[in-house]
Length: 262
Image: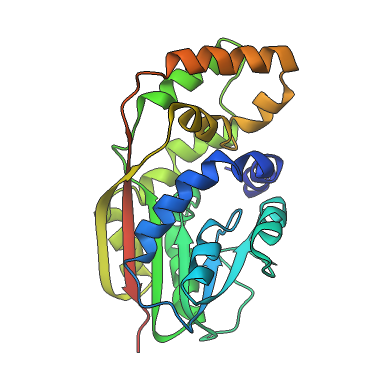
């Protein structure tokens, strides 16, 4: 999987990602952050920050949060929303000196990487001794009917999965989508006090928000944006009917809380 293709996809879908997907990932960020310390007064690096979903919640909890991402289009949205000063950077080679921060947060980043243990080792390097490293990924069994409904509607209109997305699902995502896999990556990174667990998070989204979440994801958003206005309206109408009776959303995730060596 090309890092450039992945970065470009997230850049292209930044505005859409900052809409309904941001609301969903906000709830998931809150579920991850409660597994960490009291955040007030801490300097926290939010790696893979995207549109700043976790950054804003860290700031609200009293932390000084620095969002970092390889996709600068995402960071532009984050800057406009949180008034923060984002930094472009690669999770596997963080442009931060060793021991510089109190904690690192990596929300739904590791499932994009072919070597998640390298990113965790970098997180362990830049936090102070005993500092916190938190991460979340999608669980292997995670699913919801809205995904299939939306993909079927898009496929009927000519959509095909981008190559980077297919490769992501077949390769990188499988490395950290279980508690055992995520814990193994943390041990490889020489983290301590490792707590990795499957966590199911209920997210109260209305049917229209469920549709917005799926259409706003980077593998779908550029295709949807390129549709003629009439076709896009028809798509939304069709999906509104198809999703009216879907069950409530429960997201299956794997969450990690660990500490750097003292």
